[in-house]
Image (cartoon, rainbow, N blue to C red; front, side, top):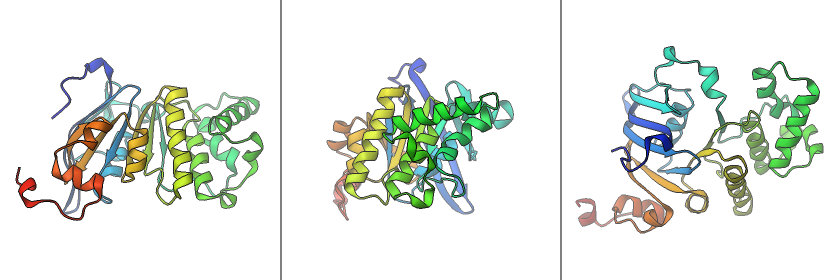
Length: 263
């Protein structure tokens, strides 16, 4: 059910009865979720369970079979009624692999969206923004000449984050931001997620199965299970939940008590 205790004016993203299937496989079976302005919502769940599919619906890369996606009061699940470019300018997305353009250096990757959406900017203005975004992710301006092939996995994700914030979005979407990274580098990415929320005041949505990351960056956590959100709560509420499926996931247990699963 939607979170009825949230003031509608405080909601940035609403998912209502979201359903999505690919062939005979049902991925989303009726997702309901409210995400507040300025919060970091972390969506947890098993790999392949549909977390990234939810993100792609939020940014309009996928359209639901049923249900609605409402972003800042605009229903984006009916694309003929809105300008896709306009709504996407409000969003930045960090893809799981970083998805940098291999033929472009760091500076060109960050500048890409600026040149695409703001052709009126001079090259000097573009480069000024690139420098600002590099500083936000704690990289020196000289880093702009590095090619993606010269970067470590953690550096690629940092550059991809700089590209995601190039247009100063109101919403940042993170798809498994710490996957494939060592614990120290993962913590650097977690700190950057917190920095972006603090410095930019953005609404953040993070999908992950990394519970260390989830507990560090989340204001609230939503658990996706069998295509539905089965619980939403603060970090403490999720840690202390009595829901056996949530407990199984966050503790890494292989099995749950059969008596619990019947409750």
